Amino acid sequence: MTLFNQLVPRLSRAVSRRESDSGTSAAADSDYAIKPLYELKETDEAWGLTVHLPGVAKDGLEISVEENVLSIRGRRAWAKPEAWTQLYRESVDAPFALALEPDNSVDVDQIRAELNDGVLRVSLPKAEAVKPRKIAVK
Image (cartoon, rainbow, N blue to C red; front, side):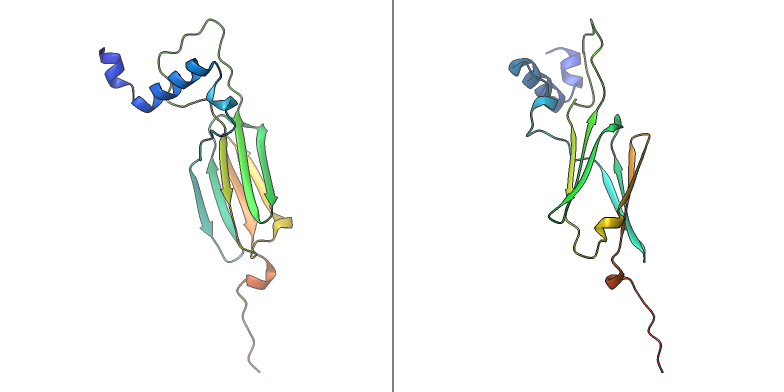
């Protein structure tokens, strides 16, 4: 075993082997997707969702809400340069997929999203019924 083979993580080699054995990339496999890193914060008015999608542009991003499931799918727009030989790559060329199930307290019609430099920020406003209120005592 060469020093290079010892340094390269086994997971990366397994993906490369799979790509070369099947003749297709991991991105072409519809069952294979990467769950992106995300963070969810709550305020009185809304939940703030931050999703890290490196290499994803606006045209490769799809956000949908169906049957109370928020789905985020992103595809990278990277193309392998001609006459390029891959020795090692830290990330696989696979789509990102994230599915979250917010409860009925999210106002689906008011959801807003913004993508800048591979960071997606989604605002999930709370429905009026669950927002905290002060009740006047008479």
